[in-house]
Image (cartoon, rainbow, N blue to C red; front, side):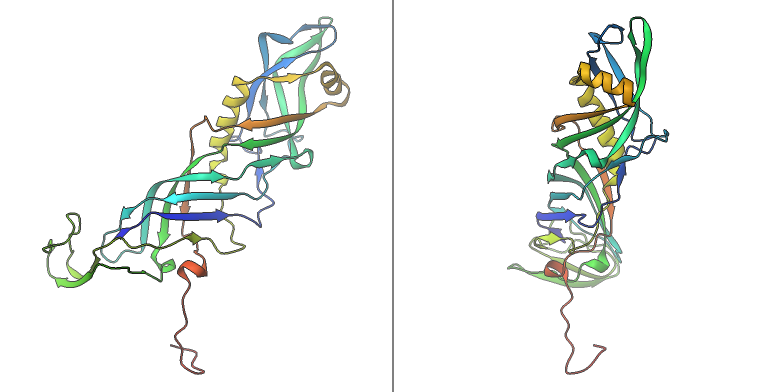
Length: 287
């Protein structure tokens, strides 16, 4: 069976508890351009200072990632096999992942500086707690789907034909596509690609994208190293006297970074696309 390309969406509207930055696989790093009064070391851009987040610090609360929507195109693919329980489709590329909007209420990360900031040759700040607001945009992903065949209930046919065969050995029937080799046993094949339509996850279903967080952390670290964060004199004093910095990071664009790889297994599909239509008669409950 050949599957036509489909436009698909997935979202996690109920997921408000996913945290980023509390695992050793989600460490952020980057460069800093620090301006501080009476600074004698660790400031400026020759060279830049840097930071590395500490997921094990008691001051790291993690960043709450808001609910996101991801749109992706499922490419045309050939599904062939005997007594298959699932279908695997690899290399599905997202067309858009909703921007991640972080606020000062999203949480904080404790970071260690690569070099202590010295004022009048005295070490003043060597670590701080970083609270930020930012819009992270341009996140991309490649998705490998393994979909349980139990979620597929409809095969809409439009033109063309199909055949049902019974054979005791693998055989290529005349007129069938070159890759349509009927396997032993009952075999059904469709001449034209089967269009499964727009496949939306059911409302309220949460798709877990957290497996991509380590890769997003790497992409963020590259972006924060290529575009050093400026820390003003007032922010430096804030770090010195309060032990923390509030920073508006603006927009962090990750469109130039490699896509994150995500594996999704058995995602339920919406009733509009693959819902079972009851065919009961009268008051029958089993039909």
